[in-house]
Image (cartoon, rainbow, N blue to C red):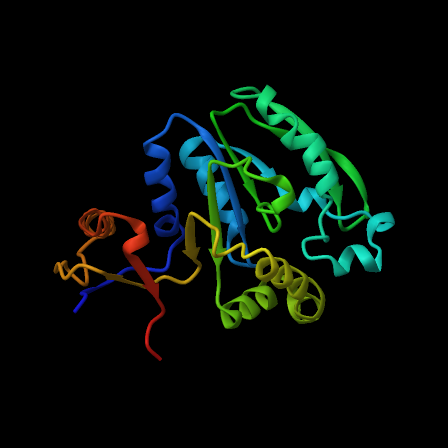
Length: 244
């Protein structure tokens, strides 16, 4: 029987498999897709802090009003300005390795272009946000990461972040569009790594015993790293929520 290792729900823990992957390489492009309110933006900010990654935000490619036709929105993955992402980011990336570049930002608040986003010079580029794994973009990334969250936690987080009225709009409008895209293109299934938002328990596929309650955060991190090394791969690790 697998031994459970209790850990805190923390974005640093979620980031660990990505850092492990980065430690084995000199640079690359990480595409961080996932469900609404699952912590994609915060996780990408941590990667910028820990590894100096340049960030590209899919929210900057909000679909302009003139493109928001019924036909477009009924198409899985249509709720993003993928044409502009291709021309302003994908076509530029091969020419800008370890060099800064910029692209135009579109504001969903003013429904207009709002300056430019500067992407810092770095061997690492993180493209974060819904639709970053769109099949139209093909295999531009070196690592596909999917950020997951349960419906219950998602709802609570959106209410806390945006209020009841906006949460109702998310539930009726934005989340169904994203879920249609995720389901139609099997976005989660095709990910190289899946990082859940709530991960208080790691159950190892091996029966090794480690302290369930480390004495300090440093010991906790060391214990998790050691346990995962024993498991051999993050793909052998199952994240689970606490029993109710």
